[in-house]
Image 1 (cartoon, rainbow, N blue to C red):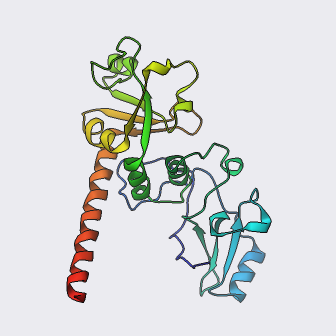
Image 2 (image 1 turned 60 degrees about the vertical axis):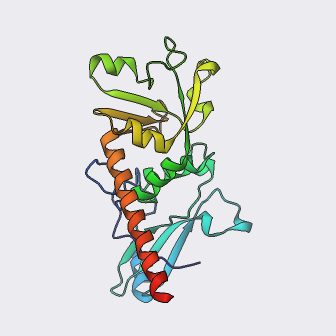
Length: 241
């Protein structure tokens, strides 16, 4: 297994903060790794530079891979323990206590529990198809985006409810009202509107509610970083040539 540098440290719980940037790690929502005991620190003092890993207890023990590794402890040179969460960890639905049926489901879970930075989440969101339902009184969508009428009337917020799968729209939604849209379109057309809010699987226990201004800003940051990476790669290619 490749050794990745530990994270600076983990705290919990944490809500997504609009002041964060794409390099920030939200969460974890709850404690993931066990607290070290005195015997753990004794191990760290005797094994500087070594790792102790933790794996998904629901995984098949005969076929463990990097994807089953939740994270670990890294023993530093002073005998301390640095926690690390594996960004490649792919939880079973049993471990996650939710269905992980798409890359976006996985990205939502990972960002919710501190396994990835916001930049990864916003990239996956932009490349995913989201599901939503048109309003009963506007079945052809002539009025534009189907913002939640309650919030529009009482708070003035433009709240758009989207779901990572059609099944999560719920059984009572008229199938003729179901639509899909790319995350990129939401980022560029909805999130740029004043007082917009996007909920992802919002009526579930693990739903997310995000201010459109936050999402739009993270999307701009991700695009700027992507352009900078491409420019740097182009310069390296030219210098190598």
